[in-house]
Amino acid sequence: MLNYIWLALVITAVLLGGFNGHLQEVTTAAFDACKNAVMTIALPLAGVMALWLGLMKIAEKSGLVNLLARALRPLLSWLFPDVPANHPAMGSMVMNMAANMLGLSNAATPLGLRAMQDLEKLNTRSGTATNAMCTFLAINTSSIQLIPATTVALLAAAGSKNPTAIIGTAFIATCCSTLAGILAVKALERLPIYALPAAEAAIPNIAIENVPSEEKFASPKWWGNLTLFLFAACFLWFAWSFIATSHESKSLLVSVVEAISYLAIPFLIAFFPLYASLCRIPVYEEFIEGAKEGFQVSIRIIPYLVAIISAVAMFRAAGGIDIMAKTLRPLLAAIHLPAELFPLVLMRPLSGSGSNALFAELLQSHGPDSLLAKMGATILGSTETTFYVIAVYFGSVAVRRSRHAVPAGLIADIVGVIASIIICRLVFAA
Image (cartoon, rainbow, N blue to C red):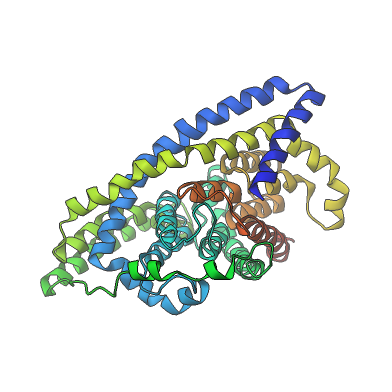
């Protein structure tokens, strides 16, 4: 499906650019996008990848990932029946989902790429996405959001009186989109057009043999547990101090959200090595071993990033999104979707930076506390850059045939948009 979408974006952009006299803008956008894909996304991602994959390696060796996976094993076994219960992919996916739910995008992407690499070890058809990969992508692009930190920050920067008001609406909308994504991916994988051959749908014996047996991990001694308790107490004190200072000028909910966003990543960066060292793990050596993969993955995804980002940039520069919004205005009115939100809805699956820019324009023109702004914020917080995520995640394992991942992700996005509009009308409309 990505073949047809990518081709349609490129050809439509060139033709529209020719008719509108914007061919130069289309050309410039293509080259700028190629540069941004490499210099702004892929290369900086190498450092972030090295950091989180190194920490992930430490967490694996210490047994933290295994603890998380075991706690959610019944749910994960239902979602991913083709993945053995004790496979490392289970823990990687749990870590990614947790980071997504907390709005930790800097951690979620590297952890998601690690999960895709673990899933690829069970793949019997190189270059073709497995059912587990498609399910993971569907959940990733529709992930339940407890804290849509980026959207809240944009509202706060625009001067909203209550920027965290959309936390509840985004949570409900993402619950709807996640459920829709799971149902869609499970239904689509049964269709003949997407089904794998029966002989290859199951995990082969060689893959099962490569799955490690249940490991027994060392645990901290009593003084180690005391150390962990004191460490956690320090962070609770940091959080209390931050909230107390922030609460002087902001609401309690805003202060709590900011405290979580401020302290979550430093806590994880310090906690993983501390716990592992108390379990007698050589943390520096394990970190280096995991970090080696970061640069390799970031280089591997460059062609996929260049392809999707340049196509989207060309289509936008040619005026394709504006033309679609004007053309579909009567239909949007019939389904009660505000026409002002359509460019954001259309851009969101394609580009994160583009959708943030459109949302900033919406805030400026309608105000940060308007109903349209709250709808846009909820949409932004409850949907994902589907094509970017699919390009990056599948690109990291050289998957070219995405099967039903794209339609499942888009179904989740559509349900998230519809749910956002309905919920915001119920909650915020006077």
